[in-house]
Image 1 (tube, helix red, strand yellow):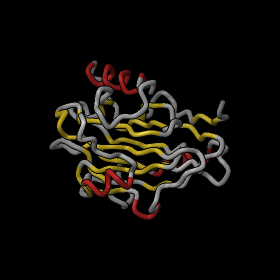
Image 2 (image 1 turned 90 degrees about the vertical axis):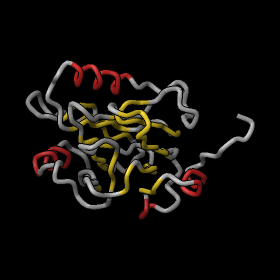
Image 3 (image 1 turned 90 degrees about the horizontal axis):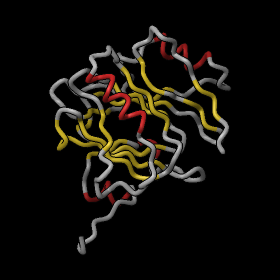
Image 4 (image 1 turned 45 degrees about the horizontal axis):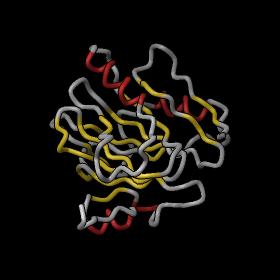
Length: 194
């Protein structure tokens, strides 16, 4: 069992999710934008959507040294593959029209027992018209996870989460366009027998 610290954003904050700092992780927080015209967009610049208040909340919750906030904003790599270290939190900038949906039957997923209940709860809240601007999820399991834009299942982003003792192969470049090489680097290979 992993010891974790959960961050409570309060009831009036437009962030939905359960971000936490897992024991043994660096508690890195990154973000990715859901584009207004569909799909995911990631770059290495701070996101305007993550306000100073959110940053203050992360650093104030008793996390030693606070979280390292490495965020992304609109205008970067479209529908990328993202390498995350174990315990990283991803904050998705979302809207009623565009939010991440876990593609449980996608062939690249390699964790059949992944609990994506929080993503299903996000979908329900969005369909009910709740005002949510950000969705936070901490990846506490290693593996490959494929998400689609709620409005277009062909617009995907792949998250490759390393094990507790592993690190992304090139930590400085954790965002890549989806290509044969980036899939191989993330440990995803094609099987000609499929």
